[in-house]
Image (cartoon, rainbow, N blue to C red):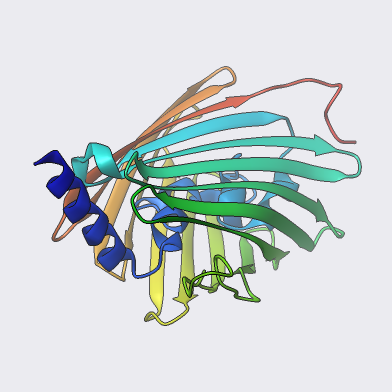
Length: 279
């Protein structure tokens, strides 16, 4: 019975994701963890997961972990870990992701680099090793890259573009599994240091245009809340965070109209060391 359930779950995942890469590439609350990408005051170590150019705005070394229990099922958990290191030669980042369970899983590890080209423009790039595994079927992997740029139009308005796997390509030489390309345009408007509005227009290969939009409001220096929606499946998300000293903890949740709730938990640790700070 367990084998039948596992097989059914794998088929469901493949149908809903269309391509193997999409489960890992787009967590349900992806807009939540990357909301601060097009911002100066609200950027954090997870922001470069949405656009690598946001890594250029990180001022101190930081690490973060995020977990998402998708649709409240153990077999569809997603985990992500990131780290950022600013240097005088530019900022470096590492991202590692895992989605699935023992009978179907996807993983990706990437190394990112970003720097500011003056006060108006930040650029970034990330190289990834992506793989998916189905023990009873096959294993496939691929090396790809993503690149982004963010333009600081005014002190409050930022806009940028991001391309994931722009050159396309198959996952392996022995099958026709294709890793899709994703193109994004995003912007963020900081009405004040405490309030951010952000949105991304996403075009994934062979899929309709999707819009992810959200807001963040800081009630106090230590407390803030985020909320938004993804137009593709009309999935709203919301969350709240609290920080003390160098530690920040977020609790988030999203709702899919057909599949239900997906709670998430995020932990970020920022290190303040003069040894690593940029001039």
